[in-house]
Length: 88
Image (cartoon, rainbow, N blue to C red; front, side):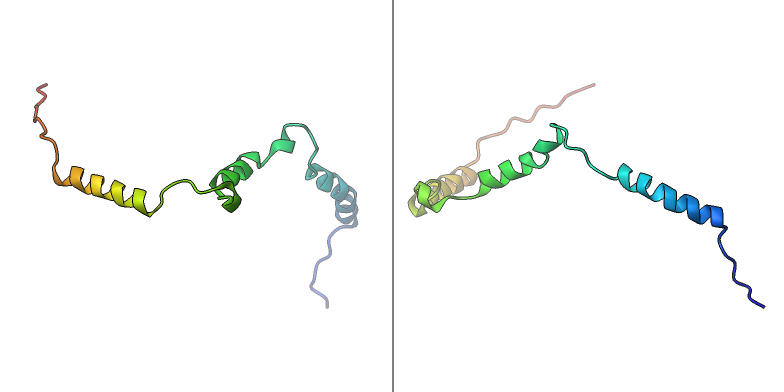
């Protein structure tokens, strides 16, 4: 005796008929708002990409050394801080 069950024929037919409808619901349309999708990411990548032919900019060794010396001098000699208490 075979104990496996079969799906009713109407369920199989309705599945075949509904499949194109389900696939059509997943389709994307080409409205103007979606054409700019991802533009922010592409712009950020372009801003963070260095063009070696554009010329040197930013920190070179001399500027970096001066910046670090000034930073270390300021950190080593902090300004005085006034302590004030707020009463409620």
